[in-house]
Amino acid sequence: MLRYPLSRPTIEVDIVEDHAVLREGLAQWIQANAPGIRVVGKFASWAEAAAHIGALSDVVVLDVLLGDHVPLRAKIQAILSAGPQVVVCSSVLDPAVMRQAIAAGALAYIPKTVAAGVVESAIRNAALGEPYITAEVAAALDSERSGPVLSAREHQVVSLYLGGTAGTLAETANVLGISVDGVKKHLASVRRKFQDGPEPLTRLALRDRLVAGGWLVEDPDH
Image (cartoon, rainbow, N blue to C red):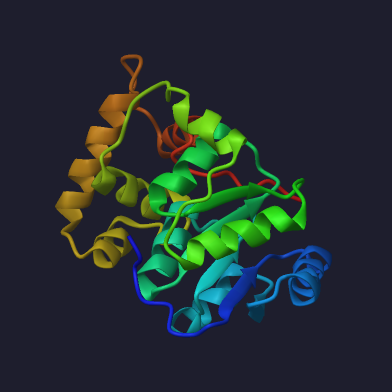
């Protein structure tokens, strides 16, 4: 379903990509080869894009690894809440990350190895509120997730508390609009799901297991 009406005949696009060559190269390719699509914003970091969240256009092309610790799901949901659709374009081909992006509401997950025309097609579909699922993503979505499954609220809590956007119980509670006791309750539930021995999981051990399960995205140096 279309989240909001496309009010202009031209599809306006923002690109969030920390590598200048890729960011500028995609923008130039679109300008030269994709009639009816115009790049209006180019952001080198999530912080830059977030500072303009209310002014983002029809479709946002979002990289996964931007050198920060903000969870991918949180970025996608922030963009969707502001109105635009999301196309993820990344070198990360982990099926768990693909599933996470689509589950968060992205309409496409495009590997950076594909031709630019594939990105164009994904943008055109996204502007209409329609998904664009490649063979790689279809396979990832069809594969079964191994390990525990978190509820939406549990995932929000661990993304904020362990993913770097909040960091403390009080800050996590404030962002989500719940009590500190509520945060503790959800964290305890997540720990029980990942517990595999008598010793309680430390914060670091729990985070490692969430990363391994695809619930949090690790940002390696790149």
